[in-house]
Length: 292
Figure 1 (cartoon, rainbow, N blue to C red):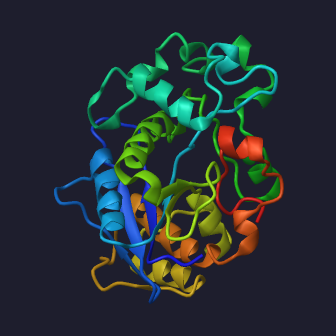
Figure 2: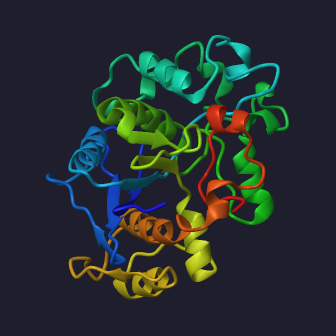
Figure 3: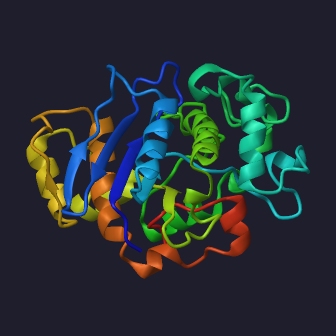
């Protein structure tokens, strides 16, 4: 598949959203940070920017660093069976949006406390009884990532002592994806729930740790231009002149993602990884590059 722009997006579930970062790699393999209009990106501005690029006729491949869905348990469904009418990720996004009570900028803090969602989370303290061995709290792709050495993604449901708060970021991200899907219409495919058609742009879930491991052989964050130049060179890319000598790790993860996507998108097995079934694709989604 050919794309005009490969976009990496580091995400946050916090309010205000001060840790969102965006980077883009063009067809000449130059990676650049995409700076916000104001001091910080708002989540909804990211959706607007991608929709604008698509409207201009550019075919975009955008990777977001959050979970696109929750674990699905066969015979039970999502959320320990409390939402039997929610049968795929798009219906799940509708639920999260409704449970967020219209909070500004796609913030989803209220959703965590919604009675349909709250009992499935580990909010604080020791391991709750409902957690069991944790197997129902992880998606298939998270298990595969750990087994194949891609990394160990944190369960969306684990908020206790989780440094990155993946759960809150994912809930907010689902609201943003719902908005982006409405803005872009049939010009956008959500992989792997939807298989991209000719000319469509694509959004997908990514895991920056995977790209850092590929480029550097480790998981350390990259916050310096010299180290980043070496990392993106692994993917055949160079850096734009406007990237400063030092930057925060959010920009770093966005840049390494954009560079990694530009290479990984050309690998057929990334689009059809081992372990991905049609049911998993539409219910749980997949991290692009895991199992490739």
